[in-house]
Length: 222
Picture 1: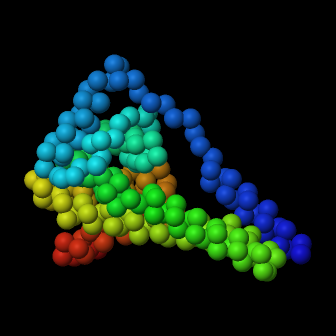
Picture 2: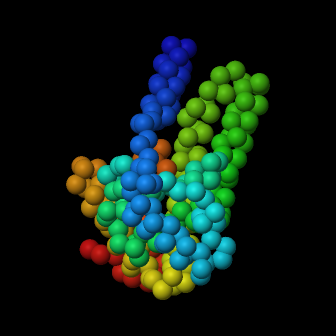
Picture 3: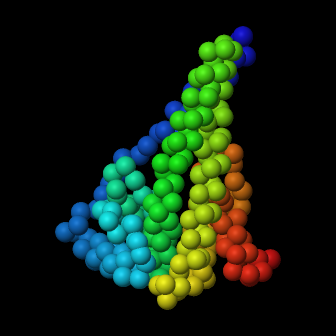
């Protein structure tokens, strides 16, 4: 009984730690016109050749953050791009990273992941009606399942980039070069880009690069 209580406390603390957020600082458009015009131009150019290009319908914002990253908030229909990503990537690389985000919207990844979470929670809640304490298992199993599913969604979005990049007059090498730059950045910050944890929502960058190379028939670099 004491062990179960400690396990519950540990899981709750773990989940709350994962929910910690930093204050987001959005750049003002009138003070950063060049950055906003660049993103808007790339979205517009992609929309002309990729149908449908869901991401174009999203508002977008740029945040002050040296970490190269981009993500979509499907509930608010907003694309977020960091200054670190803009500084690190050329237009070709940035276009394909945004194409990756477009795939998340196209495949409805956020809703599917939320549905998996809801089904898992419901299953444990029902189980708890028959076996006392079973419901607490959801605190561990739910993030394990949703994180694993999220990693598969990342690879699906990467494959979509490979399948459609030619429409932009680009090739998978442009995308791999962006991921390589992200990997180098992570290494410069002391983060490992060659391992993936059970609760990680993204595969490690080397796995993503190797997967793209396998799809395109390229041999992995030694």
